[in-house]
Image (tube, rainbow, N blue to C red; front, side):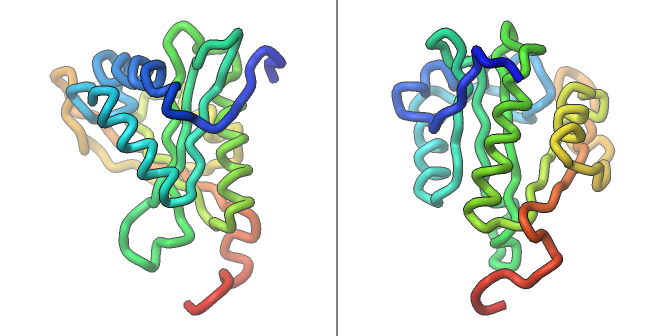
Length: 179
């Protein structure tokens, strides 16, 4: 791990940096299937919604600068999915390869586990995205499948790779409360 990188909760003051990181991925990458970067107001609305749900929205900092962010959101809206989350993680282009992704993803997994969730799903854009696939595998995710050609971006068809990992007890015990 890189001791120069710290993780904390994302705050409203971080939205400009978060927006810039995401805009780069929208315009130049396949990790997201959005085609037009949302403005800062929309990114703040998204962050606030995740936080209102009581879910983690984290940033990685190095030398006082936000170099990446990650959050967990409901995997699907139907009630039976209530113990399953989907992760999203984005790293600033200039900070790639420094360990921020792993630090963020490990912190996100820990936060989701503490909150009592049982499964975390990654939906990775592009089956050639070895950096994200490798990061998730290193953090205990297993490949759960691939949906071929589900997106069309940059003039080509793009796959969606599904990876999954259990949190806490996973499926080994029933969750609390009514089923």
